[in-house]
Image (cartoon, rainbow, N blue to C red; front, top):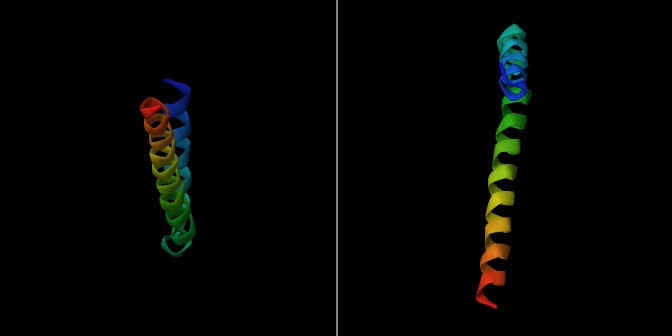
Length: 54
């Protein structure tokens, strides 16, 4: 099992061990992290496009 798969499994295990009312904050944080990654990817792509136009 790769390191990233192990980390993913650990996260899933942690989330499963939390009570339903304790899941709100981790779900919000995971969503924000995902959005930040997408935004960062878009920024890098935009910078790359600007450099290619020169």
